[in-house]
Length: 211
Image (cartoon, rainbow, N blue to C red; front, side, top):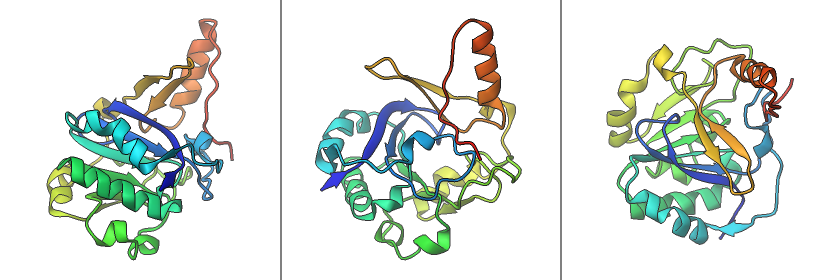
C-alpha cells in the first residue's frame, strides 16, 4: 500500500518521552491558521509504500523508546495509517503517539483507534487564539486521549502544565541541506529565532502558517 510521507527521523526527543521515531505524513485539509507545519499540507502523490517505510525505520525501532506519528493529518490516509501502525506493532512493543487535528468524536470509529493500535492520541485542531500551557500540545483546546494500558502508564504522568525545561526543539538535517525543527514551539518562538538569525546575517524561512 502506498503512503504519502513528508519525512521520518530518529531520534526525536520533543514529541513524547524518550528517544522516539518521528514520522510525518503528507497532506492536510484542516489547515489550522498558525500551524507550524504548513509544509505538510499539500496533497502529493505517494513516493513510497508502507512496506518501504517500515523497512526504513526498522533499525530505529530496535533502539527507540517510542514512535510518534504526525503530519499533515495522519487520518486523511486511514488505510495506510492502519497498515503502518500494525507494522510498527509487529516490530516494537514501545509506545505509539499519534497527533491529529480531527476531533476525538470523529475518530472513535477508526480501526486504528478502536483496536488499540494507538496508545496516546492527541486530538482536536490547533487553535492559535487559545492559551498554550499543556505539555505536548500546541493549544489548550487539544486533548490527550489515553487509549491503552501502556498509554496510561507512559503518558498519564505527562498530563501537566509545560515547564521551562520543556521549551526544546530537535534539529534535523536533510541530505539536500534543509534544516528542520521538531517539537512544539511556544508562541512567537519562531519569529524570535528568525530575528536572531537575521541579526547574525542568516535568513530563516519558516513553514508556520499565516492566518
